[in-house]
Length: 382
Image (cartoon, rainbow, N blue to C red):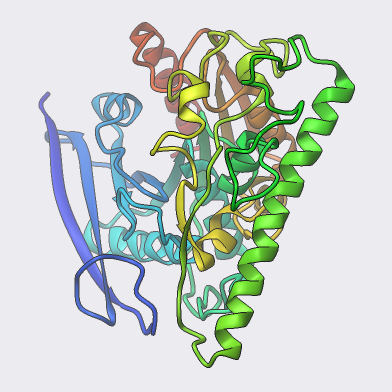
């Protein structure tokens, strides 16, 4: 059967004095989606994928699930392709509007959230707030009423090659040798693992503990600076003003240089962006370009509300966790920590041995992941 791809969009109203996306009328949000399924097939269940910055409608796993006979929807949030000013609470609102639209437009009775990669923590954040909404404002204090949105809970969550959250992942990848954000290339201390005289792997437990503590401390220094700047703007009678800034050194993790850290089947001395020494200051690193409000919502270690471990502890629906053992981005400890954090009594963990993050290097393992998903869905009547 032919595979059908149906692009579509929906518009919903939003009252906001701030605009974080380029173009479009004020007071309206447009979200683009793609519905993928085999020709002449019907289903009462939809697998809904989303990601904070979207762009995954042609991912191998998304396409393979549709070829298997599932109805798959990929929802791009309003921040498609650009997380510079992204607010995760607004991603949740976009996802909620998508679920409501799916049920009204296509008549789906069940919706399963497919949380692939960075979409995993978004799925958990959404489900947490749909089951037990608590949020009315962003971490910066701007309105984002997830209680009043009356989000419809999904019927299940799948965490597929997912990491814990944007904030935790960024922190674990931050270069702790940067001590002054105004002088980011002054890295003359022993925590610079890319320096010629750096500590040699395998690293001692004491070194790793100090490295991790310094990463968290750096994240918190940036957060303190962000909050101070916001307070200065308010004091200057500019409460809605924003300030963009650059964060250097965000692909520096002992996992990349020491294969004994969070061991797996991944290739050593590399990362999913290639050579970590180059990616550490390259233009596409996490949080490279950001804003005050966006930092607090998606990157702050202490302030971001999208924390997979905390969100997972507050959901009740069935959860599937799939770990790709050769993943260069989402390492096994993330999958295991997420699985252990899930409060639901109905949870399942699957290792896809040898699979990379995208199933591009090992396409022969894609059917293994598809079967795991299909078996899990059918076993629960989805």
